[in-house]
Image (cartoon, rainbow, N blue to C red; front, side):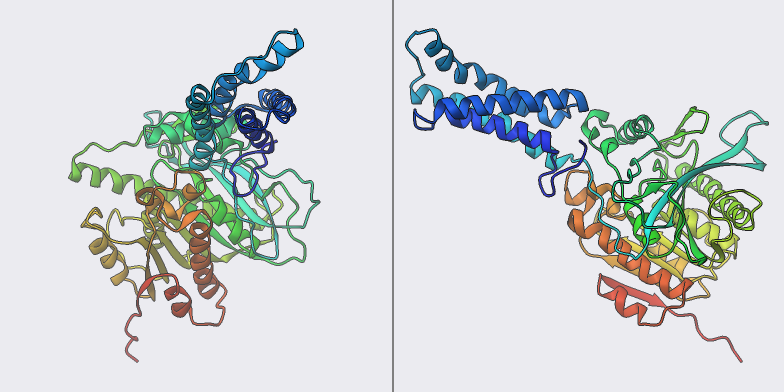
Length: 485
């Protein structure tokens, strides 16, 4: 019952409730012979849809629809009831009924507008030849104490979600919950993300209802092919699932994506034993102090990325049991991230040459700019405006300029900072927040550009990478001078 009618952002029961409410209000203005039949039918549809919604859960977006119908219902039913009791029917004059109808219609119209602004996200169908499976693992680093707690016996633990190429399954296979392994975890994460931006959680009550295209624990694709690996670090306060649409698209094209929750930095992390770890990172308002804190948090994230790659190597060799044993090509690995995660990806690549390529999704390069990057790098950025941090582009230019490999910086017109995650799928389409590319084009642009880069750098696919990238925005790229012979 959580399926959404394409283009309407409402489920079938919600749409029926809307239709019944509209018909109930409109019945007053129909010819007298049609009014009773329409009123009875509309009332029946409303009652049935309300019963269904009370079972599956009523979203706040539907409440104005039900409120408008509740106001109109007594006036619509009164003439019918009076007839049945033998009393003469009374109906308000049009000039009295019109304001009431307008008020009811206004309430009802608020529902679909709210559903459009705060929808249940509908994820784009992955375009690759593979189905997509997913699974969640939790790993503890025995060599690193947890720096966010004072307990010396508390070791750093990360939660990782994997998306991978899977066998084609039955059409009825249940798709994975968005934001969590269960709906309860998804609601916990959704509420925490809303709290990060200071908004009440109920506004996003549709998000934890969503399902993605991946299937939990689906069998790995057959054939014995080994898949390149892409590690992902979310933005500050972000969570491992924040780029699910992107991860599913990459997995459908033959990549394994490993996205991290960073405890005490991600908005909330639900551990395997049910404990929840909330974010403890926060800005102080002092630029210098915040710069030092961001550099520290970035270093922790970079270490997390290196640790997860080591664990994936163990998994591939069979030292950790799992269905992906023998299927990970850990000689072809990219490290990626959004916002602060992008900064962490840059740092991880500087420190660990096992990473063969880097993608920074609109991330400010925190921390030291040395040593130089030795991997090809793609940086996707939003358009620079008067509101952009004036230090951002110089820092990014410095980081890319030090690279000893080819680097690309692609500025995408119409993009905003949250364009590079799943935000456009469920946030209000405010250009300053999610950009102006739209709910369909935003995930397409991010996936198409990064997939082209990964194919060129990890798979050495032939073609004009610069030409492909430049079709999506303003491309600048730098090739290092040839080494002296």
